[in-house]
Image 1 (tube, chains in turn blue, brown):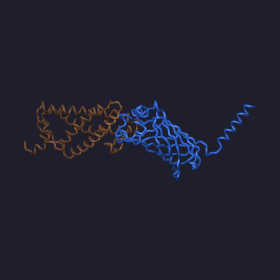
Image 2 (cartoon, rainbow over the protein chains, first blue to last red):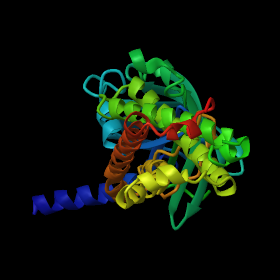
Image 3 (spheres, chains in turn purple, blue):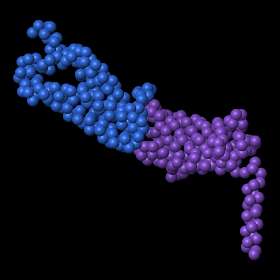
Image 4 (cartoon, chains in turn yellow, orange):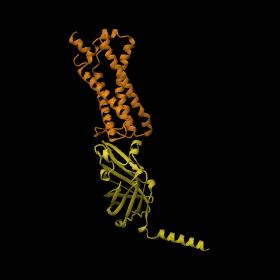
Length: 191
Length: 186
């Protein structure tokens, strides 16, 4: 009897908690429908790659953007440029140094609404033990209960020491890298 | 020999210049390709690969111009004396080699361009001018095409050797002065 009662109590509490205050509820990233990629140039030739594995924690209420908290963790070892030769290079110490820095991370410090479904997310991007403050513009659209957050921002790879030594030559691989993302998020209130 | 007859049996100066410039360029690029192909992955290798592509495309362009030029400024016929001195099989190889050379001048760089397009590495000439892809990126197709750039380049190399050997035969064995027609000083 006691066991059933405890279970019932737990179930009711859990249900109560999950229905409480949607304003502070966690949103959920759908990694399978999301992408984080990057584009740069190699002697003028466009190079496009993406990360196969990443995850994020999102707490975002469009009614209270400044209370938002967004953090991402990206497996640097999951980076691919679509060519086996370059993919074999990326985990090495001169590039992502995956052995020592298996994750790149982003931690938001503030979110500002720009109107029309557009937001500016400020935060710290950390790659290979190097951190930099970045401003990320994001545009939100919604369809079938899934919110799509997309945008892009530029970073300088040398700031993060991505491509060191002989690879620091920016005439070979450009310093400018565009990070592009399209994230599918569930559990967000109506825009 | 009258200067008019001589002109008929002599290549046009533009043809001569194209012949030597492209001949030397092809030999250099072939050696370049041989050297760079097995280099370990490095910035130097990427640089060499890109230079090789730029040179290849430049040669392709010049070869097209050369073909158009030849179409409008036909090559001089073989002097009758020399033609009669050559057995039929030699004459056939003479003509066939030249046709095959022209075909390969175009085929080798086109296959290279096709391969790099299919492999997802478009050519950006001199790092500035993006060229269209001959084929859309397709890994499987790229793998199929890859060896053919090398095979056709080797075929071209063999024909070049044959061409040089035959030219030397005329010069040193037949001593018929045929090479004069491909010399600016001839």
